[in-house]
Length: 188
Image (cartoon, rainbow, N blue to C red; front, side, top):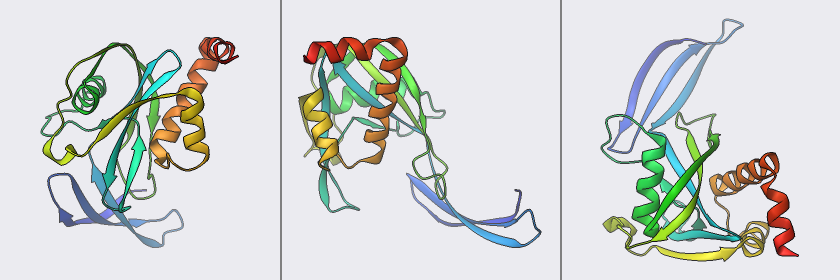
């Protein structure tokens, strides 16, 4: 589908919204409102059977939300998913990863938004000071066991769809590499 016309409706340093007029396959015109945002990285910090999560206030939801660390690197000329993952991990948690393994990508709102999330699992972690931005001053971070993480997903304490999807990618990766059996047997 090609755009016949496009006009910017709104822009700020983080997003822009545009309205595109397109021609459908049957020839009928249609309107798409598209939110353009930069791609981002989500990092699953894993130390054996433990996972490091952050909790922060999400204004659109008007509540605090537990999720995996992540975001986009503001002011970057080009997007480097691994560099964004390392930066967000360090800034939000203070953790540094020896190894980042790429798990896949997500399109969290493919009907309305152009950005994609790039998902990594971080291992070989060392702790250091976090480097949070002023808007992240009230952020908390904590370690959770796999059982606690899964219980938080099941009961809605983790409602971030991107974090839940990232965890699913990790489970699929573990199954593919045989690491799921190791984690299951470690739990008893």
